[in-house]
Length: 447
Image (cartoon, rainbow, N blue to C red; front, side):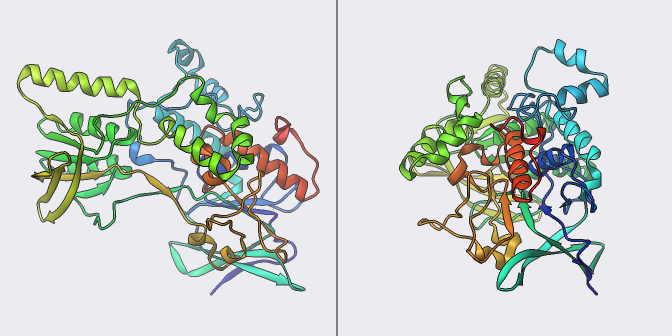
């Protein structure tokens, strides 16, 4: 049995798929403009999220880990500094504003920023339906023109009763998914670092003894996993495996950081393909496979202290790759090759953690057949306008906006928090313009 919400009084102007920070920021911008989930507002909007409640990288909310972006790059401030959805307003409501200022830092604890996200999400909960998994999107044609999309979703508690919602516009923000090396097989002893905290918690409850853990990766998440496991299992050897000679410091210098400025998106978007590629290569060190200097120094200090004490638990296996993984009932055998000589070492380990990053979900993963209506460039990448709207076939009147998956058109900030607030304002302004609503403070800083 299918529940159908597609009558004249139940057509949405905007349906968002996914409700992480990007679509949360958009929901706030729409809310501040008077958009509601019911008929009668400036626009009618709703967001569908498969998780039962708001959550953002919960598996890596290590107690002392800090954000890598300034708190001013929250959900609203770069778009509208007067918004009461800002991180500072959150601190005031929580009674910690003065305490935070006394810390003299721009970078809050990650657990605190997650609590801020939850606080903001609760204030726009009327726009969100949690526990709702989108399974397909179908075009609706009238007089030869695709005017709507039917979004088919299901509640995991009742998978045999799908729901269909009709909308004039989609905004897809399904985030990133963990990337694993080809051929890897996750198990109870082999997992991606996105599961770090719950997996370690399970081991603690089961009383499992960890004598050795191997972490593959050279980025911030890898270094954080190494540090966390080293502290969580004080008797275990922690082996960090990566192909570099050493961890690369993140370049957060003032001029390099300008790649994350809103104006840099304009520069990148208007540049020819070869310039886009050059900018991406030049500034990879601001985001990819890099580690905060403070953490690098802490790990180096720990290694030296252990060497002085004659008991080295933290082991850096640099210039190396994992060549074979053989999982057993009580652990995993990991073959590590030292690349300069080809020498191989077999590590009998209790855990193997892949800190191998994330990748954007393909548009076809959620949009199904309507992905075929989207135009692509010479490299088979989606054509996306400056307002983050996908260019589609001439007979498609319904719109698709993307938050993420646009690094090829909008640059490095496509999947980062740095321009989330500004991007939400740009999409909001575009939606209002295309639906005939007047601009408001939701897009007031975009000029």
